[in-house]
Length: 199
Image 1 (cartoon, one colour):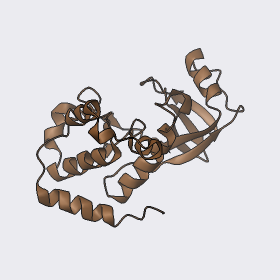
Image 2 (tube, rainbow, N blue to C red; image 1 turned 45 degrees about the vertical axis):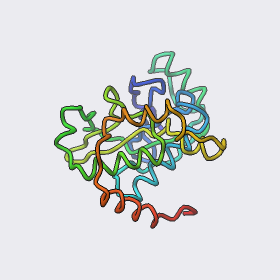
Image 3 (tube, rainbow, N blue to C red; image 1 turned 180 degrees about the horizontal axis):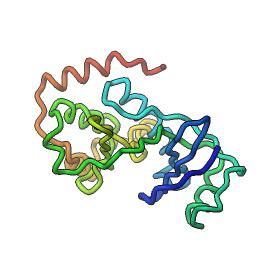
Image 4 (tube, helix red, strand yellow; image 1 turned 90 degrees about the vertical axis):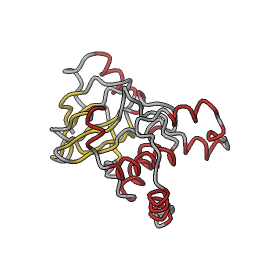
């Protein structure tokens, strides 16, 4: 396992490593949002992929103290040292770029609706106009970053976030929010009902 570089983004400073001859982007758990962040990422990405929303395939990455960190700045080095153990990684996409708000209008409306409905399901409050959390790789649009979703926290904590005014306001300000045809919602629910939760 070799540390290649890092990305100065948000609190997590994801690192790029080479592992088993593959380049991976690893989100450091210490910099992630809340104690359920790793689980949110794992479930959100797997579930989204099953629903054909083109999310990434997550993998568990075990970081140990043999990872050479001398070439990175001290802030990133400290995050890595505090994150030794289990972290979450994804295939590193060399040519990935952030989608802009101007490009949103060019994306298939049905696909946008499916991502928004999935955000509602995951209670994902972290997709904003200043942070779309959509990346573009060639002609693919990939939704990323489910760590701040509240579904798992709601389920395990017995809370009702969907009756929380502030949470609902966050969901309404989702940049993908728009009037969705009832048939699109029905198709999404039909796909959702085919997902094996135990799996």
